[in-house]
Image (cartoon, rainbow, N blue to C red; front, top):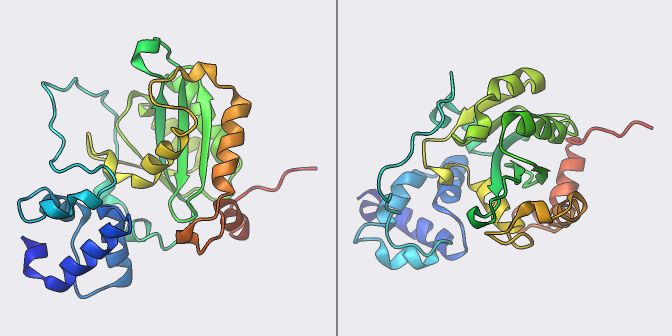
Amino acid sequence: MLLNRNNDLLKYVVAKLKIGWSPDSIAGRMKQEKFPFYASGRSIYAYLYSPYGQRHCKYLRSHRYTKRKQKGKKQKRTLIPNKTSIHDRPEEIDCKSEYGHYEGDTIVSGKKTGSKTAIVTIYERKAMYIDARKISSLSPKQYNPAVAGIFGKLTESKTWTLDNGIENVDYESLEKQLNIKTYFCDPYSSWQKPGVENANKLIRRFIPKGSDISNYSYQFIGKNIRQLNNTPRKALEWKTPNEVMSEQNLFKKKSK
């Protein structure tokens, strides 16, 4: 495999895995730094799940030693028209060389609760900024206004990357309204938008998996999101996401 054939590449990947970087983060940084070696996130995962790389799987956040198996037949996902693949996304987005590129996702209530209430989450890839809104269902009628409300506070929203969920079926309306370009992950490939996936894990600290999200107030969710955005991040040289967003003038000024 590629990593077995290049010792410098392997040493770099393992060193970054040990400090908590995901394979996609490692691949993105290698591309940005223009090292003489490179492996995509997919190649790194393939190596780790092979007999050669098993010993390094303990450094993955998931601690998974094998690729997740799909149980039985998957239900057909809602067909999303005219979508643009993540593989056509410009390099500057992958390398995080500029601001204004986001990822989007949703957090749903536990199945046992019977609740349709969910949370819309967005994540700015370079500033590590998170925002979220509670919605009563994943219907585009609920989802689109919530998304528009989030982006309505921001000055520059160039692109965002989504999965193939039913809530995104009317994404073209949002593109026109917000003047934002949308890219879609491959089916069942949430790892292709690692930033917002990690943001959801942070949100799950105060809204545990399986919860009925309708039991949490808008004020409670907003308070915790503000706390996350006011926490210094090592990747931001110990600045907070809010500080970086403000420095880059990515927040619209409130009218007096």
